[in-house]
Amino acid sequence: MKAVNVYLNFEGQTEAAFNFYKSVFGGDFMGGIIRYKDFPPMDGVPPLSEAEQNLVGHVSLPLGEHSILMGTDVVESMCDGQKTIMGNNVQITLETDSTQEAETFFGKLSEGGRVLMPLEETFWAEKYGACTDKFGVYWQFNYTGNKAQG
Image (cartoon, rainbow, N blue to C red; front, side, top):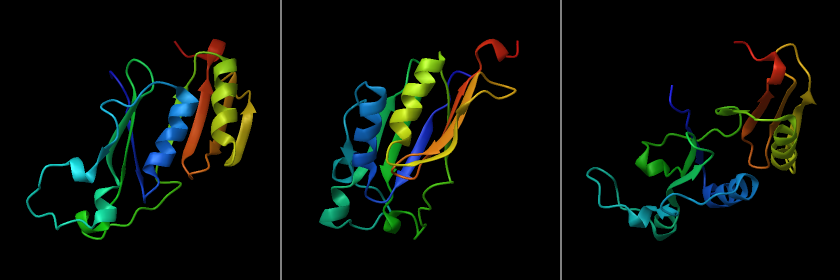
């Protein structure tokens, strides 16, 4: 597998969430923030209100050489009324390069959120922990270190 990319759906919070993730991981958005008003007309899609047109249609944040975090604000009228359920619908696992990196990301992402399992040694990892961030997204942190299975 070349990469694992994660796509997050929000209800009007995508820009705030991705600016937060950018502050945690660094980097720049690929192609900037694309709003619905920037999309070409699409067959079968009803006209969007001005507020909906200003929502985030797509944003991509590289998380390293082979991973990208992507997101959008869901517009119900474009999704046949499908509702976004935040929180446990997406879990993102980060395999870090060191315990220090795990501690740094864990600390930043759990701030304002909730620690579900503190970073600690497990039978499979030198450091493992889980939290939800202030936007309700579930994150897992894994540094296998010397416990890596080869």
